Length: 389
Ligand SMILES: [Zn+2]
Image (tube, rainbow, N blue to C red):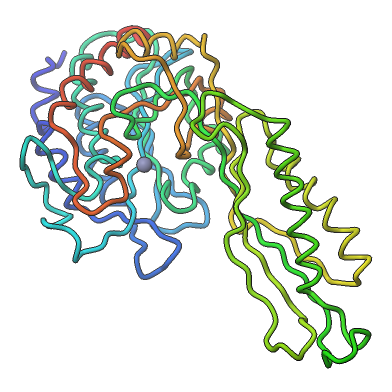
């Protein structure tokens, strides 16, 4: 039988692991100029996890060549704990960084680098936590999950939910929350509304069908809907307690003396937990259709991306209680969205909690406070003990 020291010989320490992960660009972006494959990050994680006894599965995200999810499983059993992170980072603004984004740089007890806090830093800490258990018989599996494209399409998590993998009971997503448990966030929807009418000379309104006037009425309806939703839904756990609808941009028409033939609006919706995205879209459509018919305008209403559903895990869930006890903090709500809704779809009781602050995420000079390293390892070990041993 192998001793843990043998198994761990090839696995670097936290700092060396993070240095390596940060050096591997894995930006995901809807813009092809920025977008990278995350294969090197996933292969590197596999290279460390396999000698530790993890069974590693690397799954290409369907329809996205070069993008991979990794599922690494230690032990087996009916339940189990998933420690989940995304392998991609956002793009960066080179001129605004004081150090090289791809070189882990230590300064003032902080580790600087692109992805240190959001969230490559979570993987070395999860692996370090797992090291203590490689020679113990686990009653329930410990699964390290690494996803693709969280920062852009969330297609990695979507693909996992569709594949029905991984199977486990609990999941912690290590997004930066300063090690405070998070059990809810709002959803994100971005929608496109367009009216096509007919142009004509402005001197006679009967010569055309004015898309801009249709949009004027539509804007009123959208704001009415917003008021109705804000009266109906409120959640005091959130800083902004009501669902929001933001009119983001509008384009239409070409000339003052022409009847406006096209007008297009992009807006964003942030639904609260308990609100269903399809129901909201239907409610909007129900207001737009009669208006468009009456004005003989062609209506287009469609999502700009698939959206992120809102997420909530009950306050009395076992994982929430365990994380509150281990951290001494009551689980709260955040303003950013995560992959949690898809892990929930897989039947996993899910919570978001990881080192680093969201204030540093997506910023130049992103860093992880070194003072959070050992507490993260300790908390993760506490969770593994409780849910896997
Ligand atoms: Zn993140």
